[in-house]
Image 1 (cartoon, rainbow, N blue to C red):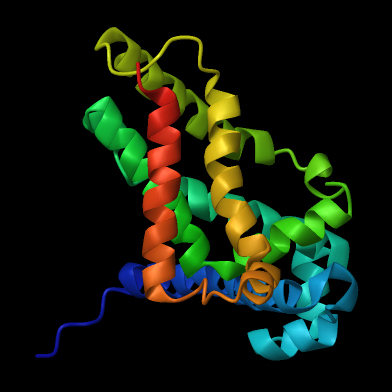
Image 2 (cartoon, rainbow, N blue to C red):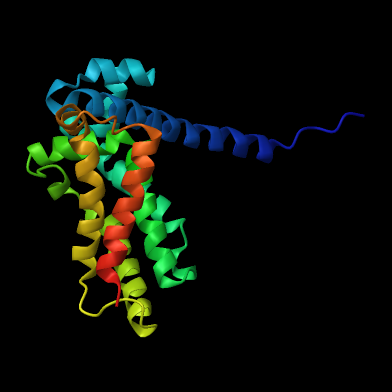
Length: 221
């Protein structure tokens, strides 16, 4: 005799499916909005285009995010969370200080190579003087751990005698991000002015080594 299907299990499956569906729709909208905002900026991006990319309708987009500016804020929060999650996955605390710094610098550089939308989204938000992320209740929480982790690396390096004293972890992180960021935010003008293929694999590897040497040279005790 065929055993009857467990009704409770079937009900749980249906409930889980209903719970996951909105999350998947929201993620599709965020992914589509990331592409659209990166390509066209906040002013040029169109809700219609985002909805088409996401395979959703505008009503659904407004239901989840309210309006285009709130959607842009959600994209920025998601963008920051992504790079911070990747940084946490490096497990820098388990490495010797010099190796940890080398890893962080190279990761930052490679992240900009692999995620060009990160640069364009930051450019767009800076044009708006950070008015969107200023409203965020999450951005500081998302970004604080990297500074704390960097502070721990610096302390271990000082204790071991391999890093100099008096380095502010926030200033150091801005320097790491800055020497990586400028290269990519200005790569088209730099390529034209100096006649070098700065996005070739060879040029990228040369730049990554240079950036790492600059940061570690500064930190050396």
